[in-house]
Amino acid sequence: MAVTLTFLGAAGSVTGSRFLLEAGPTRILVDCGLCQERDNAYRNWDTFPVPPSSISAVLLTHAHLDHSGWLPRLVAQGFSGRILCTEPTIDITRLLLMDSARIMQEDVEVKKRRHVREGRRGAYPEVPLYTPADAERASALFTPVRYGGQVKVDGHITAEFRDAGHILGSATIRVTARDGGRDVSILFSGDIGRPARPILHDPDTQRGADYVLIETTYGDRSHPNHDIAAELERVINETAAAGGNVVIPAFAVERAQELLYHLGRLGLAGRIPAIPVVFDSPMAQSVTRVFGKYPDLLDADLAHEIREGRAPFDFPGLRFVRSPKESEGVARIPGPTVIIAGSGMATGGRIKQHLINNIGRPESTILFVGYQANGTLGRQILNGQNPVRIYGVMHPVRARIERIDGFSAHVDREGLLEWLAALQPQPKQVFLVHGEGSGAAAFADLLRQRHGQVDVQRTSERGGPVNGWKVTIPAYGESVQL
Image 1 (cartoon, rainbow, N blue to C red):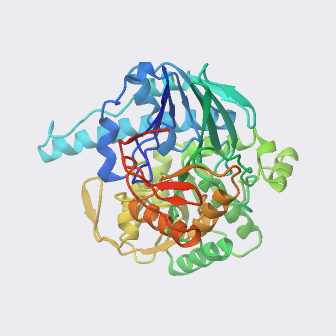
Image 2: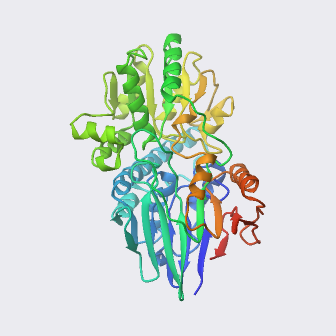
Image 3: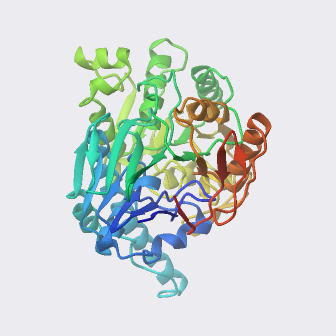
C-alpha cells in the first residue's frame, strides 16, 4: 500500500492551501483554501481532481481563508466527512466562511449592475463561488480537537495538532499514515507564528517527521527589527498633521486585534492625537469577541485583562461600524480618522470603498500591515501601479503609501531555519510550500549555503541531499509517493 501526497495549492504560490494525502483506501485533505492570487483565481472554479465524496476528512491548520475558504465549495461538490480542527478555529472559520459567502454574493450583484451599465451582461460569470447556504453546510461538519492529543482519522491515519502560534487556534499538524507494516509521518507546518509577539503564545516545539511541508512566505527575507508602535505612531501623527485619513486594509483575524492593541496603548499614552479610530468590519468585531472565550491560549498579560473583566481591544475614540449605512457615513467624519477595514489584501469587502474615498487624496495614507499576494489590489498599490482599478473604475493614486512589515504573523527566513533545525528526528525530505517561486527558491538557496548541496528540482525528479534530506519545490498538481 502506497502513501501518496498531491499538491493541489500553495505550490509555487502563497495561497490556496490544499494537500491531498492518500493511504490505501483512505483520502484526507490537509487544508482547503481559496486561491487569492489573481493569476490563480481560476483554480477556485475548477472541479476537484478526485470526487470530494471519497475524502474521509479535512484537517484544518487554521481559519484564514487561504487555508479554509474553499470548504463550502468542496461541500457543494459532495464532501460530507469531518472537518477536524481546534475549537477556536471552528469559531473563527464559521464567521469567515459566512462573511466570505456574503461578500461573494454582494460582489456578484455589483458586477451584474456594472455589466448592465456597460452593456456586457452575460459576458462574465455572474454567480458566486458559493452561497451562505453552502457555508452553513460546511460549518455543520466541524469536529473539535485538542492540542497535543492523538486523533484517529480512520484505521490508516492518525493526527496530532500542536500550537503554531500564528493566529488564535492555529496548528501544525503531524499526520501518521500506515503503509503496510510501516508508519510514514508527515508534518504540515501550516503558517508558523513569530515568537515574542503580543496576544498569543509562542509556537510549540514540534516533533520531527519523515516528510515536512514548510511554509516559505518570507523565505527570501528577514523581518526588520523595528518598533511597530513607533512606526504606527509616526504614520498616524504625520497623516493627522496633513489633515488626512489613515486607511488600513486588515485581516479580521489577529492583524485587526493587534492593531487595536497597539492603537489603544498609543492613545492612552498620549503618543497619537485623540482622533476617531473606525473599526469597519462586523465580522472582525465578531472574531475579536472569540478571543475572550479562550484566555488560556493568549499571552499572560492579555489573559489577565480578560479574566479581570476588562476589554483589551477597546479604548476611548474607537467606533465600531456594523451596518452598510454606517460604513458609508465614515466618509463624512470631520477631520483625520484612522479607518480599519477588510479585506487584508484589498480584494473585497468594505475596504474598497474607503480606498476609493482616500486613494486620490495626497493628505491621506494607505497603510499596509500584512502580506499582499501577487495580483491582488494591495500588491498593485504597493508596487506603485497608478492608476488602479477598483470596482471597474480606474483611480489615480495620490495618497501616500506606507508599509509596516513588523506586524507579520509569519516567521522570516531565520525563523524558518530555526524551526527546521529544532525538529527531531530530522526529515528525509522537505517540501517548500506557501511561497511565491522566488521566495521558495531563495530559501532553497539559503539551505544550500548553510547545509551543503541542495538540488532544487520538481517532485518527479531526484532531489539532492542536505544532511540526508531531499529539498523539493513542488509544482501545482504534482504527486509524490512517500
